[in-house]
Length: 142
Image (cartoon, rainbow, N blue to C red; front, top):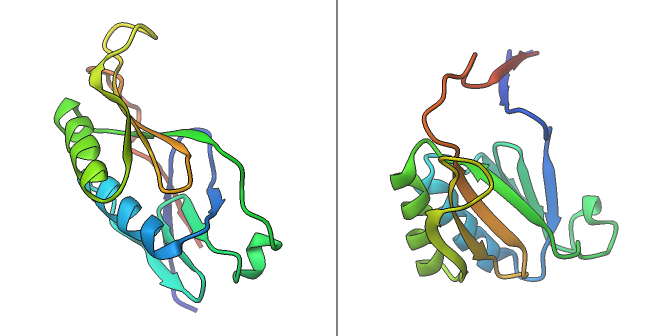
C-alpha cells in the first residue's frame, strides 16, 4: 500500500457541498483556490476535491440525493495579496461580489474578501495579519 499524507488545518476535517452545476463550481473553485495557492486535488464521476473541500453533484452517492443549503465558510490566505487575487480570480470565474477586499472589524489585522459561489454560498478568504504559527498544518500519514 502506498503511503499517503494529508495536511489538515485547524477546525474542519472537511467540507462537502452538493451543487446544481458541477462544471460551474469547478471553474469557480479552481480559480478562487488557485489564487490562494491551493491546487485541485482530483476528481471523479460527479465530484472534485481540493484539500478539505469536496464538491459533488446529485449523481454522487455522497449527495444522498439532496443539494446542500447556503453556507458560509472561509479559506485562510497567506497575505493581503492572496485575498485580493482570490476576489479577482473568483469574480472572473463566475463568482459574485459579496464584499470587496478590505479590513474588517472582527479583530485588528483581519483582512478579507467575500464572494458568492454559483450556488449562493458565501465564500471568504481571510488573512488574519502577521502572526506566528506553531505549524503550517497538521500532517497525517497513513
